[in-house]
Image (cartoon, rainbow, N blue to C red; front, side, top):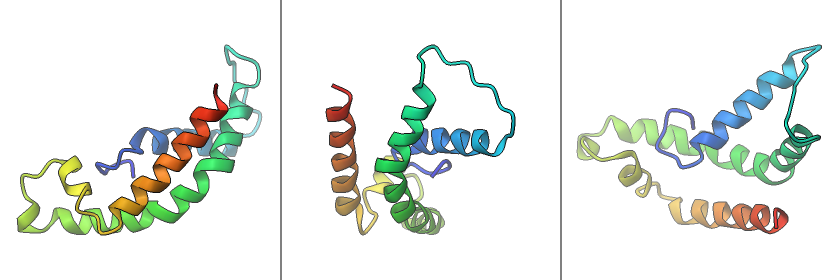
Length: 106
């Protein structure tokens, strides 16, 4: 997802950072808010991990294949991603997660 036009690019970057942080032993993290990291990891695990697992490889494989097609030359990443055959289902799931997250943060 990091190299695609998928709108979860920043989320993928955050997951990558969290994943690297988890691998490091004796890591000290200084946060401005107590417990920020544990809350962020909990949110990722409970609400986002399943969606990333379900969609990332499927979308990336399709997207990288589509980039090579002549019909798609010159299209923006956003235009191209809308051609993903399961785009509507993906958007529905993203909206569900966004709703859960925004409700939990109020």
